[in-house]
Image 1 (cartoon, helix red, strand yellow):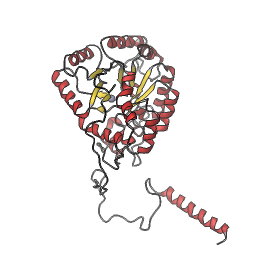
Image 2 (cartoon, helix red, strand yellow):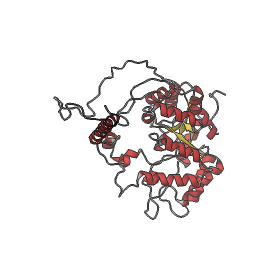
Image 3 (cartoon, protein in one colour):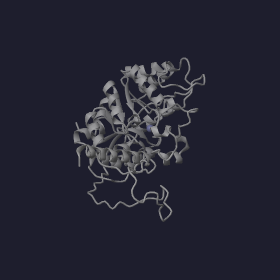
Image 4 (tube, protein in one colour):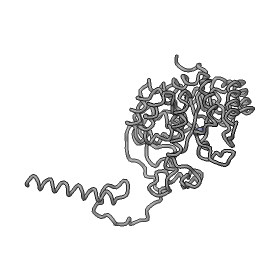
Amino acid sequence: MHRWSAVFVISALTSAAAAAAQQASPGQLRPRPGTGRDPEFPPPTILDYQPRSTLIVPAHLVPRAKFPVVDFHGHPPALLSDDAITRVGAAMDSLNLRVMVNASGGSGDRLASQIAAVGASRYRDRFVMFTNLDLRNVGPGSGARIAAQLEADIKAGAVGVGEIGKGFGLSARKTDGSRLKLDDPELDPVWETAARLKIPVFIHVADPQEFFEPLDFQNERWLEMALFSGRRYNDRSRFPAFEELMGERDRLFARHPRTIWVLAHLGWHANDLARLGRMFDSLPNLHAEVGAILYDLGRQPRTAREFFIKYQDRLLFGKDSFQPDEYPYYWRVFETNDEYFDYYRDYHAFWKLYGMGLPDSVLKKIYYENALKIVPGIPRDGFPR
Ligand SMILES: [Zn+2]
């Protein structure tokens, strides 16, 4: 064949394939013979279809973390009675969770009662409390008042601020009825007080990006959004867009570079780690915590491994909801090279996970060293020196 006609044949094939790819639905690159044929049996729903995997590969369950762990994103039941503290503490023992940050410790009396109850228990060196700020009905003078409460809670024994919930930005209103923006200057005294006290501010901004998108069959989180009406933020007359919140957040961080920020849930950028990397590059005091995004790490084990090695000083372990049987999934993703194993929550992810096989030196930083560095108030006992 003449070389020009060979080129023509290849480009004709390529454009036919490209046209086919454009018509196909996601996940299908090209039509096959028989396309358009209907299944002989009624197709199962996405809830019904639970195929068993026939893949046989080495599997390494990890019931206990390899090194002692600080859970930076703890939401235990209220730590007000010896019974409750002992129940959570015993579960922590079995998982090698050495210290839990109570990110829903409250403020004022409620915070002080939990600090007192933990202090009187045999788990006294296993929990630390963060203070929760009340960011509802912010108006003139609120910033100074909230900053004073923050300082009083720190004096009472809290060792950080947070978790600041997603309601800040998504729904909290000011006294004038407008939405409280994340970078509202009224709150500047709060963030500057935290910077002066050198305590971390643990903040959850927005939610997974898909929750802000139309609920259609191309949405990765269709099932979760269909199950939980409170996770649909796609009505622009009620909620800001995802990128609007990200813009406010980025301006807030840029205006307070001395504040030690910790982004919950990797800032919801676990599906775009390069974006979080650019934030780390421009903000030396920014850290991020991995709660409830394991499904995103476990589907990109090579990219995630590289990212965790590059930013090993900026990442913290955190779990979010306290379900003791879910922690071992995290240990397995971080510590092993296992392939194609189940995640624990089908409405987060309909796919399987793969292990990242992190080196020990990186595991130690993520499990406890970074947390001890940015939270001097965490007791050091029980961690390797
Ligand atoms: Zn949380």
